[in-house]
Image 1 (cartoon, one colour):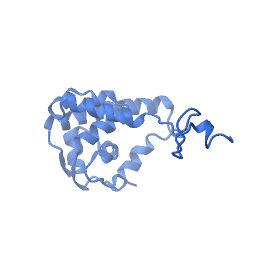
Image 2 (image 1 turned 30 degrees about the horizontal axis):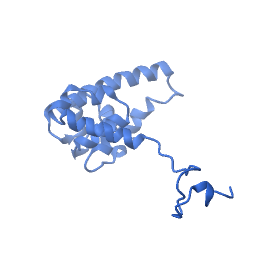
Image 3 (image 1 turned 135 degrees about the horizontal axis):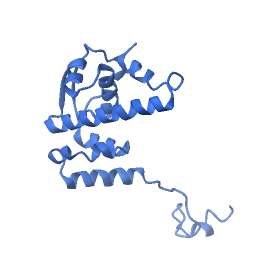
Image 4 (image 1 turned 90 degrees about the horizontal axis):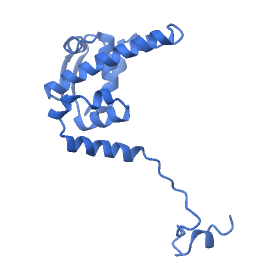
Length: 167
């Protein structure tokens, strides 16, 4: 069984109470925040070493490190197979800072996207631009044609007087 599978077992509601799972997640989120702070502090988008070595640098257990890579995977320039990670797995990845910031917004994780260490990576203007893009990407867009809108067939008539007349 891989490290990520072991970590996921700790979230199994059939084995643990909701309070235990919530405590586990709260503890992990604090460790994750500290790990991101260390990575951002270094300003180096490259992470290299064995999973165990990286975990030690980030103060994470091997299972937590596997979960960390599963979470950051879509923010890497090239994704890795997080399910196959073992302690001796050699890792060499590069973080796309803009994708990471966007994905932190998408995850609704202000404890991560509001870290002060972002100041040395992306300036306030760039972060605002990424937040704006995230908000516009998440905005619902209706494709429904209104009765008084121009008809999509291109006739120049209102929809209710053209193609929508028989509806």
